[in-house]
Image 1: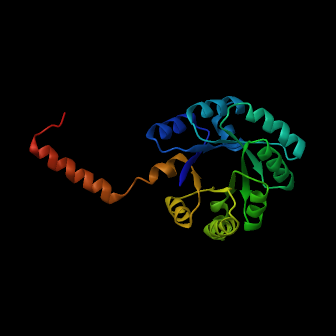
Image 2 (image 1 turned 180 degrees about the vertical axis):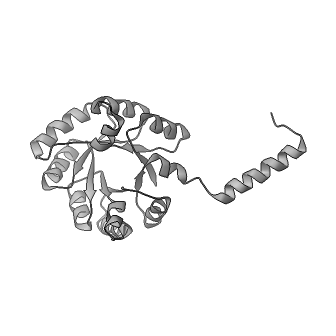
Image 3 (image 1 turned 90 degrees about the vertical axis):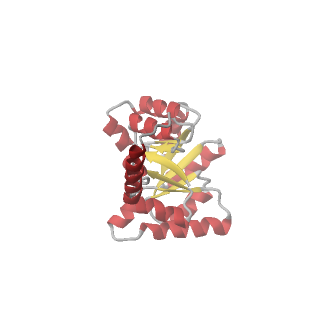
Length: 217
């Protein structure tokens, strides 16, 4: 499974990338707004840090506007992945951009039918929103299962990018089902390493080592 981080915080991105845990980044206008920085400037900085895809979202809702904005965003760096909404205009833009050889992330997916359309349009990634489905008392993982089966049935190349991740269990469950990618906030990704028995074991080891009075280096 590939790990993307869902943030526009350059310091957090740099830290995770230095750990060797990062395969890409997803951003959106809301995350950029939280950073308080210029959209194109922060996107360029992120692209310089991370080798993998960096999703940058259009704000236009019409096809022509999406294509104009995609041209601007795509010129920022070679690893920009154009993020489009799952609308008819977005799917039309997805097909056009894919034919140009661009990376495309179709976002705001809440049904298997929508995911099927995105794959037909040639999307590089489809982003089903797990947490938001859970918020309305639906099981977001059911959607991941349905998309996985449909994509496997027909050999679609579109990668399932599990989004709106709230917990470490969301990541585990998405991995068990077979999602290709997960994008999560920095704190959620870093929480995967935590286990009380790991902490206890390390504490015991260090105490025993101290008693030997030895050093390694």
